[in-house]
Image 1: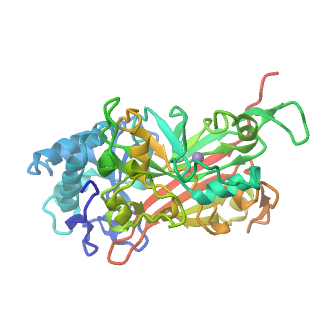
Image 2: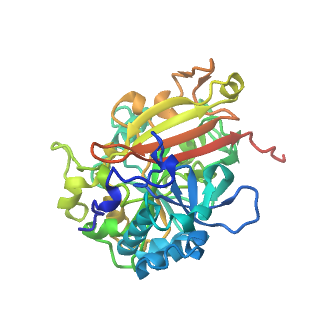
Image 3: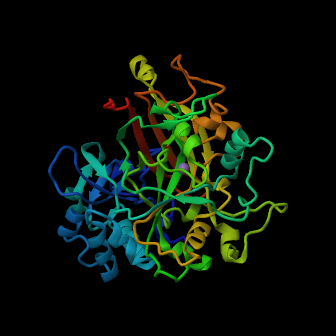
Length: 446
Ligand code: MN
């Protein structure tokens, strides 16, 4: 099987000697162990790899130096060395056997009663005292469009008579994004400027985007890549997936509407993309796999996108939420307000199908490449993952508990994505948060 299997690291009764890992609602119990790259906030320390446990980060360089892993199997120690580096690409390149050996060694060292406790205690840093960076050198970023509900809702705004393009149910639709403006949670960016076509106008105007939106997505990090010309078969695709993060694909809808034909999104999407710092491994998600189901009346996937294992458990049940924090809500002490909630299980294509499709023509994927799932809107209207859907193209403003309303984002707005997994017989695990904030547009010369 190419799919990570349940093993002793998933046992829900496991407890850590770090007490906060057992707090109800904690995103980072012993069964999670996600990776990030961090340093102490405001320090000149080197960026280095860490693993989340409770409200702490296990500093992997310090953990190695402590000698706590001296007796671990060689593949676990070597993977740990790569996991401690300032970018996770070398760890990602190793493949599932080494990722799994590392996870097992970490799980055993952080369990209640572990002999490693005395050595590792000084390798912990409170998460409250650290800052993060993008966890890998992302060579290429591709964004897909895997929610049929999102595609239908958006299509209905532009083409009421034919919301869904005829290719949608056959081809996982995507476009090549831009890696250089991907930032980690906490990213703040200036409202983009660009060309738009005002309603009723025959010529474009230039200026700040007036229809700024978020897109709630997940990001999939590629592990080991493939050689150019050698497709990754669907049955092996999950061996090439390291893990999953939260992703906000900020979108300038007015710029997008003017530019997107005939080659797709360009400047409307590449001014900022925000990812969560923590990468939850595919192995940690094993208890939350659910069948990939294609309605009988829909076309079934072509053979290169079809696989018995995918039909059995190709999808992942990740609960997702979007929250909005506004200037008014901050001032009034309202805090963040939830805009919508859904699950990744509703996606039309699975992560493995995206990998198989992306490489089927011979395209080479590389360790650290990032695949966005596309906006994850669920079947119900209040499960929409973007404002353009929640406000029906900006025509129906959303009334907020802070007394204001939104069609699209205003300066000062912060968007927060959250994700977690729950299932009977499994420990709840979470993704932390993915936060980004809109700043006023830059003053433009001339
Ligand atoms: Mn997107």
